[in-house]
Image 1 (cartoon, helix red, strand yellow):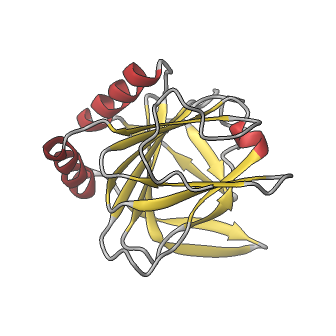
Image 2 (spheres, helix red, strand yellow):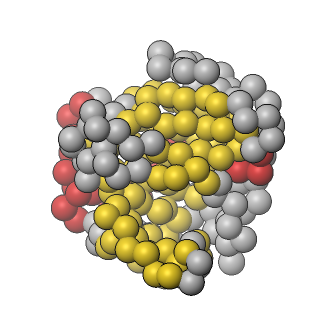
Length: 201
């Protein structure tokens, strides 16, 4: 199922076993461009790492991990320690909280330099995260397709994430659904994605 048209924020994009709300663009172009440039130039970006079958993999995609405390977060067998919030990240967190009614204490950021870089099917269900907690995904830069796949039924749902847009994943979404960012040759520009989440200390 493709959801490339705008959907009301109160409409659940998933047919069952989870809740995903797409708010569309929540910033005007001037605001979105400002945050894109600020994040691109001021975030402490590093190439992501993963240990797969005992082998250390360095990705082209870059990441950063920020939070209200120096939380440790482990995924792909690599542990990261959070940096303190920047002024821009705090403002973006508060905007996502105000619109969604949720609260967050941390943010994992991804920098995709072009469409060649994506993310394989996965769910955000690490033990450090609040179980069934909400994850707010903000997108800046290139418009990219984002997809969900049910772990049992294999049903798929996909949509385009616009520059300055907000997506909320919550309830049992991570338990029953995988999501991914498919690579594409059609995109030559960078995309920055922020996923605000709640770490349970």
